[in-house]
Length: 114
Image: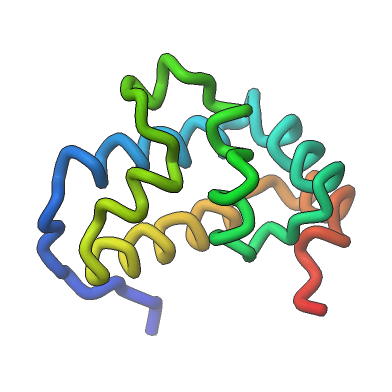
């Protein structure tokens, strides 16, 4: 049986949508390698979502135009209620698993659990 995410209503659609767009940009095929290189330089593991947000790694790759806001990804995330934050974390974790196998191997240190 395949994993199926529960359908939980997003409470703050606007903030959620903006943050989802920024994450989507970072994992776009043309930008994902730049994103991974940046995490490697900063010593942040890919699954450390709080670390990624705190280091502003998403904004650096996606650019300000995608965020369409003066708010950082961290501020958008903090504006979300707990249920939306959990869904956003799940979205981020699902996106990191879509990265091409060759790139995941190249940056295997980032993908290690320990």
